[in-house]
Length: 354
Image 1 (tube, rainbow, N blue to C red):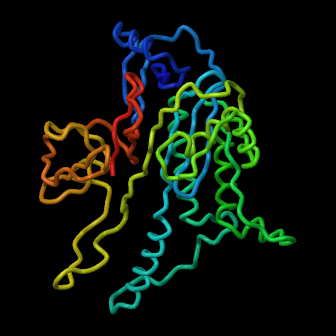
Image 2: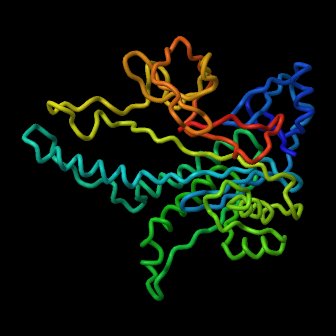
Image 3: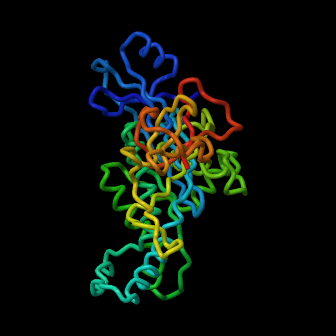
């Protein structure tokens, strides 16, 4: 059974509650419901009767294409997330490099190249840092909904060379990125557990759980089986989760600082492109339209904005008027429930953005 996250009047997270109890609090006026990135939550209007919280852990199973994140206590599994990895930054950096070099070969004014200021001792490659920052964003979001006390991460390992100590420590962006990630997690004030992969596999097999070989499948057994096992290694608890409902999360792709298209059109003119604003709306924002319902905002053209379907990211229209769109909330990722899973009454999910 899914549990409903609870926060107090100041937004501090409390222990989740049963959906029926949350519904009674809303009907009686003791609480106000709200959505947070696809998770149905309640905010108490009065002072809670108690602020004692149990230990709640986040389990993180990193991956190259998909990742599993689970929030659970010793008794209950609160939320399972399968997140798509952020994979496009490397290509963006390479394209930026090529365009910058191309501009400096043109017969037009340009500034002199500066020294490479990024090559410092603590430098993390942009593509690697973006991957770990994406996980950190999800962790911080979950900590606003649940009283997290422990974080358990499966330690990813890169290939090493025998006898080459410096190579083994610094050769791989993976090694540098994960150390940066661990430092950021420790700064959050929680207890950090770093678990080796073979320990997770042994515990999973001991519990009688199986892991799917299809890493792209939107199933609990694909990645969340390991993230739930990580929470059990941190806190202990039951041998089986009380539910396997899944929330799929995909980060939105923005072109924040691109001024125009990369290739000129007829006449050598480059059409303006990029940015994160569309006629006053932040791109990715959830809005409600009288015809298309709950959607998210894309680009804009000729005093109209484009709206995209939450479930698939498909563009629904390019001619939506801003006065017809009612703003709901900001969002920088899309979220949806896999179609083969039942929809929970109080813990259901919204849809997806592109």
